[in-house]
Amino acid sequence: MLPKRLEPELDIYQYPEHLRACLATLPKVPGVYVFHGQRDGMPLYIGKSVNIRSRVMAHFRCKDEGKLLRQTQRISFTETAGELGALLIEAQMIKALQPLFNKRLRRSRQLCSLHLQASRLEIVYAKEIDFALTPALYGLFANRTAALEKLRTIADQQQLCYGRLGLEALPPGRACFRHSLHKCAGVCCGKQSEEQHQQRLAQALEQLRIHCWPYAGRVALHEQRGDFNQYHIIHNWFYLGTVSALEQVAGLQRSASHFDSDGYKILCRPLLNGNYPIIDLSE
Image (cartoon, rainbow, N blue to C red):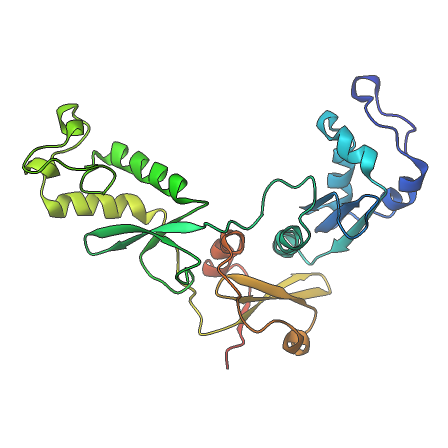
């Protein structure tokens, strides 16, 4: 039975009667949960966990979440076969419903990356090229400012020339100002070769590489918990939806509508590392 009030030091919220039934039915399995307010079509908060019950109850022990809890009218949940499905569904729901208390996983319309071709480095945007299919992309950034900040950090760490990277104007026939401060290895004045400068840049960028989509089309990623099977349908790193049987795939969107940075971050490692069975649906 739930206590009427929390311990004195955490006495921030009293369980209202209308939430007791919701809390009592929360399962100890992976999935997504939703805090609903007065307007049912616009949830207050969407979260995920490998243990729905444990995570939801943790909200009631957090001093910073009193405002959320006071507005909550009911709590719903959706079970998943595992953590990956919970991550994908949570991200999709947050983008679609824009809950009041969720601060992350919202689509950036300025999403950009660093594109390195031969000796040319430029900032490119997801609204102009398909990040899932374009090689030699490095890093996912919310905007141009963030991309330039990362490039400056790399330049500082590797003693690269701001002028050669296009971060500042380079005086004709003269070394850059940073070289006099021993912050540039001297490609601007011949002390370092163009090849060495380019190699150091490429090596530093490698850890930020965006992997191209490795399949011809859609795939189904199979996740299982006991007898509970789910197939997560993916195209170009974009999550199209989840079905319980492959016969249901026909009812889903057929292709990615845009590059989804959150989907890429969630899916890249488990898909490329072979952590889950993958079924090619392109045929």
